[in-house]
Amino acid sequence: AYATKKLHAAAGVMVTASHNPKADNGYKVYAGNGAQIIPPMDSDIANCILANLAPWSGVYDLLSTDTFMLLDASKTNDIHSTMVASYMNDVTADLCTKKAETEASPQSPPPPFPSVS
Image (cartoon, rainbow, N blue to C red; front, top):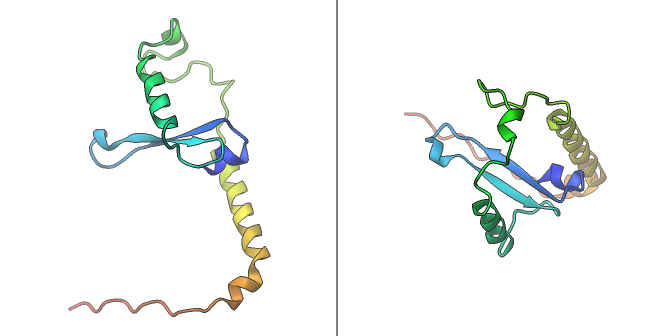
């Protein structure tokens, strides 16, 4: 969501993976404003996926037969490190601009740890 909005992308997709069964894996789709999609956008995307289940002609020529990874990744861009740094900078800057508000807010002590018997 952060990268979608920060990069002014039309949309974003986050692939989720789980230590649970593979059926629990999936993806989240974000609109250009960084928010998760809502109706009717969700059903429009689902319909587009269902209408395009067949692989594009020639797509397998672009992939390794062993790993199914791209043979030439020169046109891809791994933005993970850049976006993590950008996110941390933005959060830090936001917190610093609200320092007075943060310090003025009532502080409650954390709850005690439960006793172990």
